[in-house]
Length: 148
Image (tube, rainbow, N blue to C red; front, top):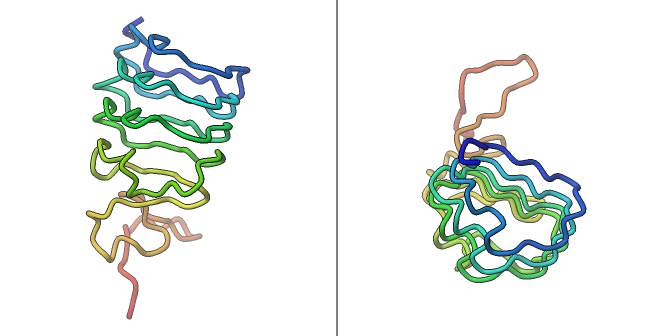
């Protein structure tokens, strides 16, 4: 099963995960557990998803807390979506995310939290970690800093 790169369990009736559920999926790059009614994640559940794992969707579940270090093994993660859960007070600076790589697109609540290492001009509306907002005419001229 090392050649499986994408698993989409969106809105499946999965209520729990166990450590070992993803063992053998060493080539997995994208995992969507959106809307599966998960209430908790066990510590170490993602430990076997290390090198290739880039996109993880945990949004629209019933998560109320996350174990410390649950994302630490995901050293190449580019996108993590936790919106639509019950993770009260969770912010980008939470120690839970300390092990995530710089520049990860972290979705919390209704807003995208951005990495503190970005330049101030990158924080204007429409710029999100290398993806510039295109105008209605479809211009692809890249991001422009806000005028002062």
